Amino acid sequence: MTPILDALSRAFRDLFQFKVVWIAIWPMLAAVLLWFVLGVTFWDTFSGWIASGLDAIGIQIWLEGVEPRWVANGIQAVAHLILFVPLVFITALLITALFAMPALIGLVAVRDYPQFKRENGGGMAGGLINTAVAIVVFIAIWALTLPLWLIGVGVLVPFIAATYLNQRLFRYDALAEHVSRAEMQTMISLHRPSWWGLGLLTGLLQFVPLLNLFAPVLTALAFIHFGLARLADLHRVP
Image (tube, rainbow, N blue to C red; front, top):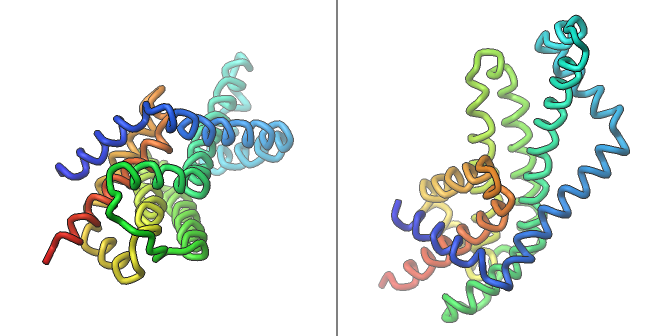
């Protein structure tokens, strides 16, 4: 647990560096703008999907009979918000992983791990494949666990989904530039429980008000620090 907490503490330290501030802000701004435009453009479509979902679990019929109408409208607005917020965070995570990670890795590696040379064990194609797999499995987790919401266990789904997405998305990117293909597999297998533990803790950040605005970059930094520190340990082993 100590290496995970150490990685998180280093991530918090780096977050407030001048070079990191803009990197921490723009993915979230871009994600909000993207989904605002999509929400306005396809409002009727999204509203139809939400109504279908509410109807599937028996709430839509109840809403149609609720008086005064502003109460029903308020509940529907909350349903839109519940859909909008996770989409924004997921998009911000993807933007961070695809576009901000190289800058963050360069900052951390040059300052804290100058002994590492570029190996490019992952490559662009590998990164895209990893991202695609992460998204597909993430969506599958949500889709397959929808019935759990009917019995109350569904409250655990966001945490499980966020944990999976974080560890799958960022462990690869954190290592890709500084390991060989063989080292990549070794690092993932050797520290698998820790990757999941770090994914869980960083996933929880997404549900903390205000702090969640910086969660994508905090997550990226934490995985970079953890991955490169473990790689340093691996190189020290005789």
